[in-house]
Length: 557
Figure 1 (cartoon, one colour):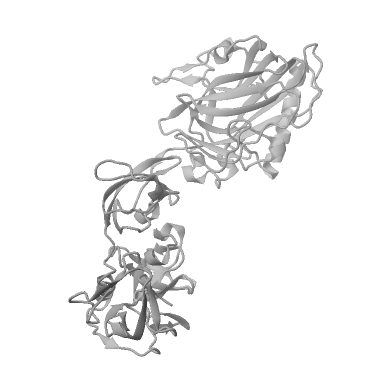
Figure 2: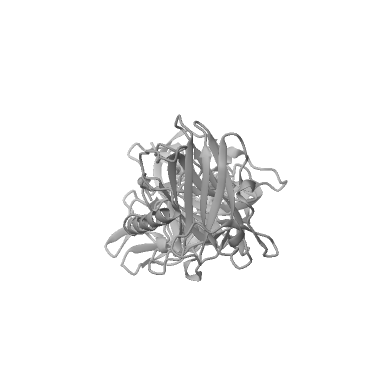
């Protein structure tokens, strides 16, 4: 289809198109066919639209002569678009689109924009075809047919003059068509024939013919109905990038240029454009939990609720009064609450209906009294008692040759990690995601035990202290977690307060009774020794008072 010496007779043109299709099929098997969005724009990954989900990048047509771009748009929303048909010189397979057909069929427009950047008027012949009938290679994604479909199922295709804006820039406009029942790649079936009741459901090819003035452009919007193709080829909306190419329909096109005296116009670059289009049925985002609790300063994302698909994002948060939260608290799908209260959260993902969940946010555990530390460990071992420990006492143990935190100890995550519902970690076993946090906001887990994956990797069996209903497995790999409490005296025999709310000192190691003194963030305190309280720790200061040994509150100086 890339030849520049094609004659103007229909018979010879059909022959060249057949040869071109063979070349396309061969290239598709080796390298792939690509697609992109609106012409001359840049785009990446997935779109943010209702019916189309896209994966790929838009590139402009590099050819001289008549340049063109073709893409699909939702007939009711011109911002909801597929990628554009990709010039095959730019590669195959990487650019893909999928259209939602949950309602049975979706009315689209095939938007074709042609530009004439040359200094002479040119005749254009554009041939585009839906290629979903390949029984050998089973390329059968979305079923695409020219014409629109009414709610009662009535199919309509008007004459071509209804699908562009007439002007002095373009003249001699006409169209012809091809059917699934036509022999070979016949583009020459007249309008009256293809719109008969026997044929209106089977229009898969379009030939556009026109003369375009130098330096001018024209846009056609041809109605197309999308519906489900082969039942075996339906994809999930989040699998556009990874689904096999056999789950896509090929929409290909070729532009041919002629001067107004009928001579072929010499162009550079391949004129074939191709687009992959799959279909999916839009479903709602699902969650394992419809509500969650968090503290002020915690990071909350879709994984907090066990969302499926896992790359759903929080895109809207409102408080109990219906007011949207400050934009600064919502960053790339992660919500960081700054005030206690009840929130309504909307999870979204391209190609899925949104899901609404709730979040209850409480004030942070009191850093001043250290009650967070003591209650955390009381949950794990209520029978333990307050005992002095030396600086050499280790809170660790060795399991299967690996040094890990002792059972009942509090650990916190120093890197981002997942909690899983099984000891063998898979994407489907993920329950909650914990993003990497600043030291004072790191999530804390209580070690309930140990287990191994099928491959022998050691796991912690834990529960989340701040969300006690969260129980599961996290990695025991070195570097992901550390003890949440100090169990040795620093060489400097001093610690610095790092929590923004400061800490309090008490006369008793259980941090109960009257608060003796409050120490603000940045205060440096002299330490005498470490005291173990249940399964946490306290620092005894040189003045005989006690403060929490929680690493979220203080740091060795």
